[in-house]
Image 1 (cartoon, one colour):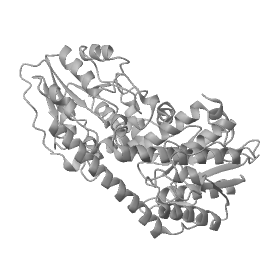
Image 2: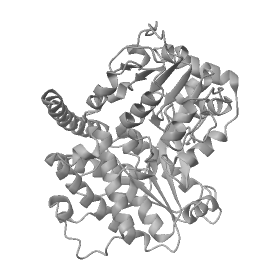
Image 3: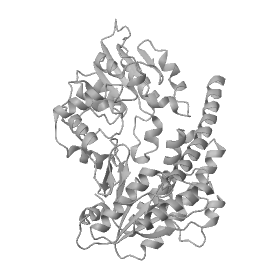
Image 4: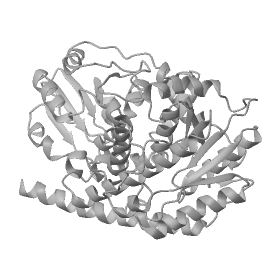
Length: 487
């Protein structure tokens, strides 16, 4: 555990010494993110902490909420953050971004202290994360796109300016804690980096899949080992897990099931000794999480080509994740040769094949990190998990460290593993979160005791940026389709 994580645990929410807390409002044009930030700040004040709320004061900034540096969106973001926080009675400090950093991608930082190599690399990863998640394009394709490369340069300059401003603010405190939403993308990650630079503890805020606020103390929401420790803290409630996994098979609870056939028509397995279902994951989702998530199994085609070659008497049914159909990078063509094998049945992203029918049909299940890992475990299947995920430390799957080991597992008569970790995940998914006195949970997600300013303008800003991003994605998709046809 790092020093700043240890410090975070020692500085609890109700610490009577009430050290200062700096809470940065990231993505203020996004409603839920703004509400959680303000609610958290007010609650910390009630607990006796001296709270300072910060927000980005850029006029033409590029970030995850404003990829094209639209000055109108910047103005809306500033107004929403500043007025909402001030009206809520909070102390507010806007973080300035030098004008040249937002208008000129060259960004002259000569008046600012030099960033460390670590900080620069972290900001670059934060920018890449936001671009990968939004444009659904893998890094090798982003580098070929001049428009996205330009966005990347401007985004890095904005984040660099914010990091300098946050460092200047934190220099005024002998000790404080920093809190920020998510800290994965550069427009929020800079706050965590500034805290680490000063040796200050930090917390990150998020929203759960069930739309509840959640606080990760001393780590980020994408720290897979820390998150799995939290999952492991939940009880093993088999009745609750039964209900959870049964609900996930229902179209009204699972949007992917809505597009799938309820009846599974299996391929002929005559002449094969074993049937293996393979479930891919969206490459961009893991790419966006950074180098800590890299594994020997990232190249799905190479891994599966070897497994299918070495186990020619096994029938492999390979199912793309439905999300892969929306990627702007070409992730399908590399499978063309593999699809021609006699022991391979390939199901593309838009195929309506039943995921759960495929699991039931199989003798073994291979996953590349998706939730199918715990679902198949709960269905009493032997699961081989290839790569890093939020399930690799739960005891629900055989986790090979190399492709050699994965091949060895395939050749063995594996027994299904204990389902306790899968039950704990169900409890985590359904029940975890940190209720906030100034948030009314549910649908809709509402504020209590304060109000978010300019709600309609925030909605317009979000729709505007989403529309522009979707136009760029359509253009990138057309380019991808053109290259596939040419090949």
